[in-house]
Image (cartoon, one colour):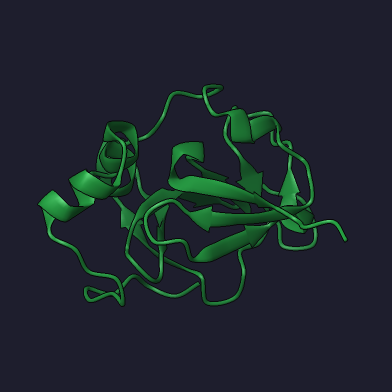
Length: 138
């Protein structure tokens, strides 16, 4: 995992982020919020396709790595290489590993070490931070 940087390819002012995101997307992606468990329709999507950052459109995860963690949030066992960065999150009186989009710095969720093989990781993502793009059928 790569530590989050301070400068990102996609940079916007706070006003520009507010104008380009829904209020809930802004709260989660830009203010490090968390959506309520079980509220994202993406938690139950298992179609083939990719998951992009709702802030900048960078592809983050594929459906091949998605699984039902039972947590109420879309979960993956591995991101696309280079798509995410992490940093320590010391809120809530504990240390967790926060996951960000490597292109815009948007807060996506957290990663935990209780996932399935082959990585043992659980990337527990806020569905509002993601857009699902179905695989095109020919």
